[in-house]
Amino acid sequence: MPYRPEFSGSPVKLTYEVDAIDETHHVSSISIPAERPLTVLVDGRELVTLMTLGAAPEALTLGYLRNQRLVDKVEDIVSIHVDWPANKVAVTTRGGIDDIEQRTARRVVTTGCGQGTMFGDLMDEIDAIALPADARLRQSVLYRIVNTIRTQDSIYAKAGSVHGCGLFSADGDLLYFIEDVGRHNAVDSIAGMMWLDDVQGGDKVFYTTGRLTSEMVIKGAQMGIPFLISRSGTTQTGHAVAEKTGMTLLARCTGRHFLLVTGKQRMVYEPHLLDTSLRVA
Image (cartoon, rainbow, N blue to C red; front, side):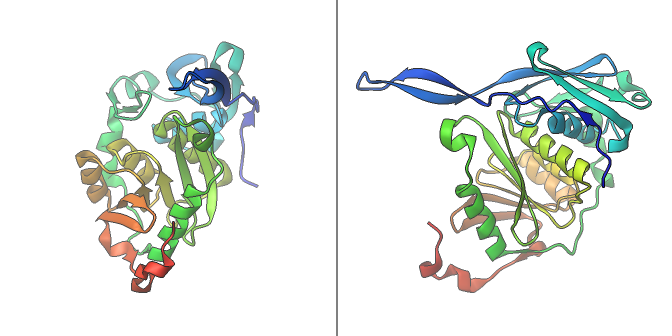
């Protein structure tokens, strides 16, 4: 069994009911997503405050530490305890984080919803990332992934105002699905889950409802995932980082439509799927 730190396992309500008045002056009760601050303390030192839905706070915290390259392996973490009344999560490590002041001094504010941040040194590490060149994604698998997300039971369908991320196998099986108020939180949560379950990214496909920004591409590359797909578009820097890391980006993925913008050699086209009688609604 993979090593797992001690978790508090603190559930929290993900949506709230509020009254709203429509254009006919009719009053009805609607669901809205929760949004709450979660301050991360590492060995008693305040590190960052994340605005989160709170669906998977322990995995989010672990994934954040992983993607910021502050912790090298999950075994370095003794425990992650969430205290929702105080809006804090306390992380206890085995030996502390070396040079934490210096390593967290330089930050880049990203375009992620909720003001995502990346420590600046991560931008300097992308040259060392090598994604598997032999990974392939079949067109039929892409369509299966898009349809799975479309029909997924989700907070977005009930309340809107959240981003969703999913990790899929090479055959299009959904492995993890997380929603949060910011897509950077959702991807960090999945990174944490992968670490906990010792899941490798080399043969996986990552889906996000949000933009394919530099932040999303860097995090996907850090997780070793060669495919990043979205129903939204990409940015110039996201595109440039994807080309630098050799990642395959697919944007505007809705129904049978997609735009393959980088890593084109990994896509396996299946022309028979263009038959209009086979289109997904």
